[in-house]
Length: 392
Image (cartoon, rainbow, N blue to C red; front, top):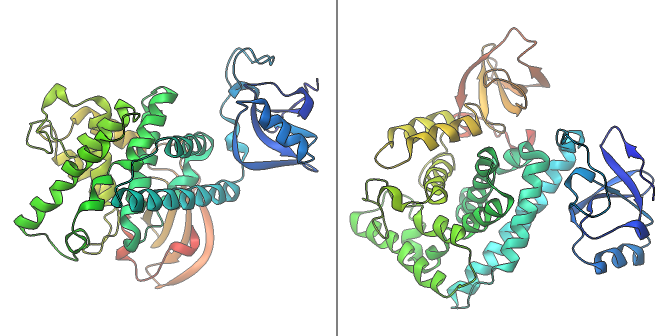
């Protein structure tokens, strides 16, 4: 067995015949390391056979993420995730593909549910696994991709972003892998009841009347009916779906749950559903900056939202989250590009526009730890006269 480890990636190169069940295949070897779309642990012999049939002789295995007992010796201390070595462009391409795959699956299931077909949980669990891998490898890449929102695809993108944020928050809270998976499935399905809401109300470009709002609230009643026909849905996923409109004081819906009746996962979904809705462009409103959304979340504690969890969520996301827009003291606008290992006020920015001169500037990566400029404020995309999308 070739047990040589590449110091630049922390990966081990192995001949395909030497692969064993439980080994975590990160990449294939084709004149160098080539990342694959769906890295993961080998679950069956068929996967190994497919690699051989496709003419692949060597693969790169992540020893630390491989299962115990697969024949690989792990280090006594788990190293920092090797994903930091992965190029951001590659990570974002993968995040884009995952987002497109997720949209397609959600659209398909919404259509099938509208026609009265039962939900199959397995495809969502597969998608959730890929989403977790993406977060573990490079959550910044997914944050940048999820910042590119379309008001015409709100329902699809909101469901996927809620799932991603639940996984990110769950990872921050050190939840188990299975919990993260069930959170993701719940997030993707959390608005499933809206397939039965009147489209005129669902997509109304303005404030709902009291009567229309009561009709909108029925989506949670519809969700209960739909999920009742999905017996294999995990309880955590069910809590995310049915608790994200509940309130700690018992004034939420559909069940008016109160206090300890709301599980941790349900409380997390309450926070994230509101945050993502506030920071998204809708047919009747512009997106809000994360900082402004945080203020609203805090204003909803402790009667509606769990105060301790809201503060934890803010620490998890950061005052200036990766992917958000900020104005710098010299008048430039930048995208928060990298914040790993840094305090909230000193990320790396990707600056591309000058408010002072009202023109695009040469794209520059600005490390605030080494610069004389500083962040003045977070801004929403709608406050700009230009489209930031090409710079993500």
